[in-house]
Image (cartoon, rainbow, N blue to C red; front, side, top):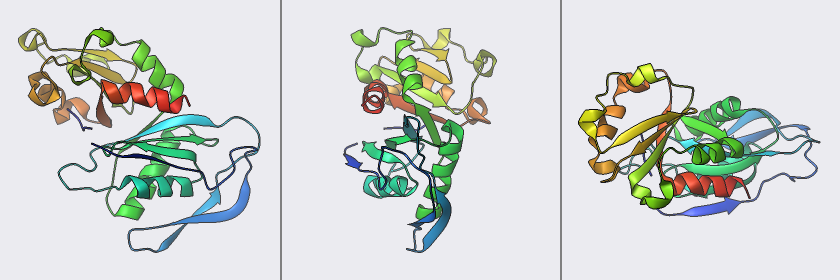
Length: 231
């Protein structure tokens, strides 16, 4: 639909202790694609408070041999940004981590910038916390337990979207396929799977995603992210 899901997962421990969290004044670095150490600034680690667990969703990587982002390198890069307990899921661009600094938008921007500097190309990133990911699953308007994972997908948006954005889609013409909007999310029911979905093609039109980042995951990944961020 708007970017997709292959094998491989891993975990890398944080370079910094998770408890107690503490700020350190020394600048930290990570290597760019040519091996040059890039100075980022103070290491964002904090004393006090609980770190929040997040999932980072990378859009459009490792598809057809282009825009390659090896998951091991991604884990190392994210640990270098000061994140704790970094893990990746599949090759299509999911990473979970704990952080005691920033918010979803600033964490996404920080990671996107680091990826571009390290790999040499821009990658859109959406970051969401465990509570949000769990709420998306709980708010699903379709009977997920009765469907195959390939039949149900969620598109995550970087900002809220309203129904008028999709008003031009003839829902009746695409039945039995359906879609429904949620909180910065779109649920797609595609009985024959995403690859054969005419409705997914319509929803992926650039005019419908203008001004927002949109990335899609199947239901297996949607629920797995809830599990991983809840650890």
